[in-house]
Length: 99
Image 1: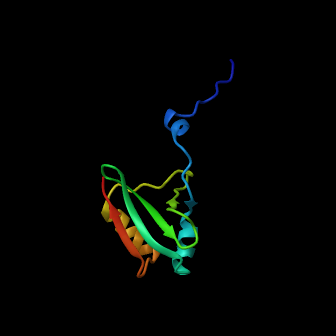
Image 2: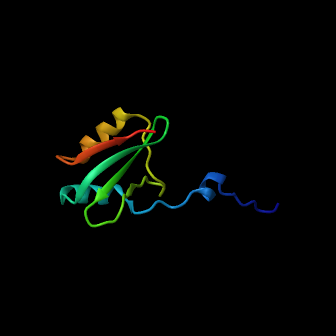
Image 3: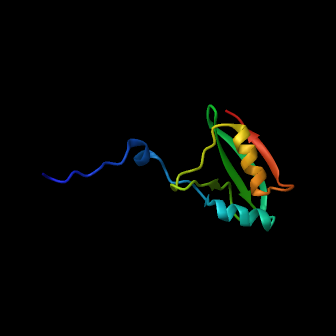
């Protein structure tokens, strides 16, 4: 038998890599250094949310990445709020952008 190669899904091929990616660990470090000016919660699809931190020394927004290297999405605002509390956002401004 000939070996079969798996193809990448169509969504993985068409997506652009996120601009200014930030990992979970980097975000926690930036929050503790008070380098995050603002956390923007963006509704990318109905009931799908992403965290876009605005860092003091980077131009534009960053995107919080998940474990697969893609932007991390949350299915509910309750889960997102709990996640932000565990990160220790402190007095960082949190803004919500809806569709």
